[in-house]
Length: 628
Image (tube, rainbow, N blue to C red; front, side, top):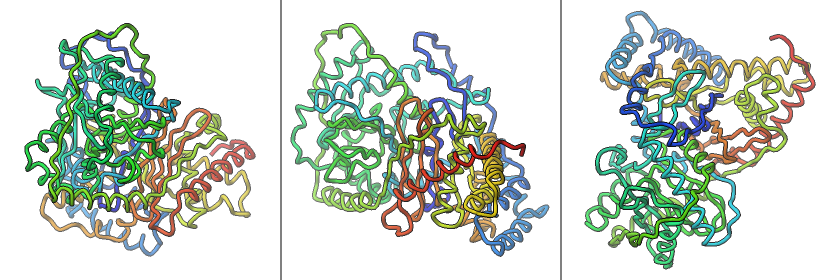
């Protein structure tokens, strides 16, 4: 991220729905049955090559829009100072123009001028733990099983669904998604299975075992902190059925009943530099190295948890299920004995939409009928670890750090029942813009000021596109929230300001998904300066830039067909992480904050957000639509 303090998500963010895009309403495409399409050689590649390249926005346009974005969040004096810096930066033949030309050269030479830089700065060079600070969790509706049998049957069905989805990826029969009639980049779908993050001393890396002759044939299953390699294909290459998987999961359960094992997975929760050091130490032993490689190469991880509070982000701490994880694994599905279930994913390879599409597919998939082949299945392989005193010490240190982090996270899941996306749509307002404006109103009522707000926008219209920022705080949103509790304004005036603000949000969203937002362009100019070994321009050392990048509200819409909610931690110490899934008749919210900050409180934010949504509905119902 631009700085460790400003973690961005495609969070969710990016999170879009099954076939939606981030904060947008995109046209959904149903997933075709695998049999509906024959594999066409290079279909994925041909599709990718036809996508446009991410543009470099015009410099003057970005600078003008930057000043506009600063207006509601800094003082007139600070704005005046920044205007002088911008004037200096934009002079013909000056530093801005030189950096812009460098970016344009880079765009001509690469598939995507931003994607490598973004992967490194937002994720791989980000040193805080992936737990809470980076990896989002998804909470699925609680299942109605309450015993081991139900848990293992559900896990078996889930694995069957994952393998079915994997077949579509392997055969390149995943239907292309569209937004606004335009095809989207499908690359992230090819990065989420058989991949893993590897810690490094200054920068991590990602390995992917989905390609090549030696493709992964196994998943990792974890129970009571013990890891197993479970081969999920028969000798003829066909995937195991749910019944076969259930038998294999029972074997794993029965051979991992001891609860006194060292939670080796807890090491993955540590600060990235500490984990990199412990990782190198761990791999000195041949047995440990083989076990770690088996986890890294697996298609995904399935965590069979003890009963737990529905805490997908971190597993509840070292005394609960946090050791029952390998947080560097891209996808970890969680099934607890009490019916709690969901997943946590490592964010570097992908935004939310492919993850949510996979989840929707698993949930919708009908179980296969017919008898399972009565072949003898080998015993799943237990992965062994030799724990030296030094490794034991690393585990104890990681436990302490994690427990502090778990205690510090304040999270509130709220189901808003009074209305869903149907109401704003009936008022001809984008549901996403309506919810974002309610967040602005809630924050303003709590703190009597506006703040920098991050909402993830998908750049998947472009080849290898990741995300940019929708800046939900605008001159228009500030005018509306200031008017809302003012006795000097009529309901009609307030309603008009509300509509104008939602329109402005919609316009910024459209601009962002077309590659014309300001955040990634400004980051690119800054990184170009570093690459050119010139001094960082004053524009990026300015207090206003720090304020603009300090996202007190980090938000993401993650629509899904499944009635789930994604959650992630705040990206700054005094901020909130807000993720939401707007359903037709209700809205699921997950709001996070840190207990260590006296000024933030997730339950209080939830209360103000609920009031804002209701007050905005009352206002629109009281004031007839007028022509803006």
